Structure formats: C-alpha cells, structure tokens
Length: 352
Figure 1 (tube, one colour):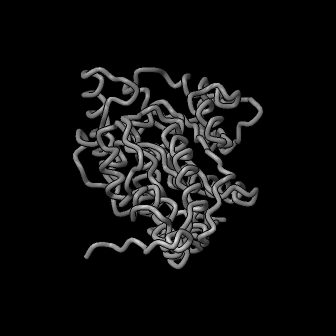
Figure 2: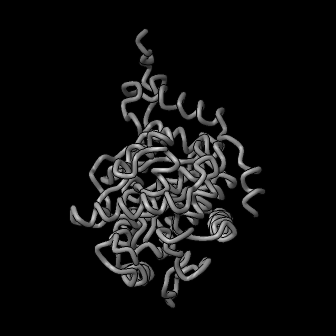
Figure 3: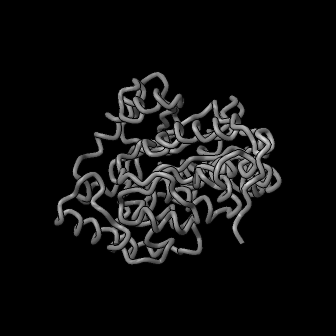
C-alpha cells in the first residue's frame, strides 16, 4: 500500500471491544483496576484487535537498522561500522534483545533500512532505501521521496507480518547517530529547545554533548523544517530507521495490529506516525520511559503512559520486549480468574 492509501485506511480502534475488555476486568474477583496500567494495556490491545478475546501469543519485533550521515560531525562515541556489526549479531541471535526475546517468546526480524555496509546474513530483511542518510548538518538528511519510500517499506513489512499471523508487534532500532536525529526531530515536532531534548546517547562526555546540541541547532537553522509537516521534518532531520518504524506503526494500525513502542527513538517514530495519521495513536502501547531526557516528553505528546520505569536506554527493542512477560501475566488473570458472580460475591463498585 502507498502511504496515502495506508493513512486513509486507518480507522480508530474498536471502542466496543475496549469497553468489553474493561467490563471483563471489572467483573474479575479482585480490587478494581488492581493491575493498573496492565489492565489498560489489555483493553487497548482489545480495541486494536477489534475483539475482547485478546491474542498475543504470536509476537514479532522488527529492529530497523540504518546509518546516519551526521556521525561525520563527531556526535557519537563510536563509528558507523558498529551498526553493521550489531545488525549481523541480530541475525545470529547474539545481541541483548535477541537473548531477551528468547525468554519472552518474541520472533526478531532485523531490517536493513539503509546501513552503510549491507549485512549479507540469513534473516536480514532488505528494505534499504540508500546506503545511509546524508549529513543533516550540511543539508537535508534525505529527499522527501526517500522519506516516503522508507515509510512505505515499513508499511509493507507490517502488512506482511500481519498476513503471517502475528497479532502484536514491537519496534526496535539500531543505528549509530540516531539519538541525534531523534533529538532533532523531537525538538521541532514538540517545539522545545534542543538542549532540553538532547541526551548523551551511548555515553557522550559533557564536551561531546555540547557538540551534539550545537550540531542539531545548526541542522535546524540550515534546513528550516516545517513542524506542521511531519514528512518535511522526517526528510530533513530524520533517519531511515525512524522512517521505517513510523511506516511500520502505520501499517500495523491499518491491519488492526497493536504496536509496543520501545524507547526514545521508537517513540519519535511513533510520534511521526501519529502526526501523519492521528488515528494511529490508538494502536500504540508504551513499554517504558527511556533514560534519554526527552523520553517522557515524547510519550506525553503521544498521550501514552509507560508501564516500565527502569532507566533503560539500550535500544534494539529491549524495553518493548521486556513488556511481553508482564502482558502474559496480565492476560492470565484476564482470561483465567474467577468473577465475582462465580464466587457469589457482590461486585466491587467505584467509590463516588
């Protein structure tokens, strides 16, 4: 599907299914809303799937890998060669998220959206738009056409996985320099100062952080992105990984599949998707709040409440995968607990 067709095909989640799930929670013999945000998450999944018979056994994590030309400005602790190295390890099941996914029963799909060096390994999905973006500090990161193409490749992947029977997705990323692109986009989309939206990424020194902020400010002055046009912001300041994840979220919404969002970078991609199509918001779940300074600000803009607060900032989708065991436990209660009626006890009522 094209970007335009996808956006037009996204309907809001089914409120009837959401309300049925909420009623089921209230009927279970336990304190009202005793599982807090986990109950809300199951209800959101029900609304997205269009049924109170929630199914999340088949789950997929797509890890979008891409390189960013802005690395040439010295804004990172490591070089772009690390992107391909980690992507190759993803194919071999040898990364942090790979180990966590094995425990959480999540199928991991590495996706090449535009790495400088292609990874010729079984399991790598080739969605590459180009071999890395341009240096956003010297001009637009990509053309508008490239941004659309990256979005559409993310859409296609989501549709493919939905057809294969996956009922819930998660997003992750790997790309040296992508906290710079994410901070730049977040600053413009939320109309906030760059220094407020920019963190140390994978461990920059104070001097490195100052340089990173200066480079982002320079990029925004030079490219003059239109914050009312999310596609313009994406093309001028973003990365192919962010574009792929944004498209993936849109494709998932069009297919009625909920998406668990990872950390800061995934959240910026989700915000891009929602700015392109507000109805997509109802298909998103926030797994955790990132340790990056702007992590909570982006989730607030998305009106999403993170379930996990653990100071995580590893990337790859590790935060998103961490949520699945909690969802499994919540679903066990949702499906298996006795109701007040079953045990002949008067239902709890909300206090007035």
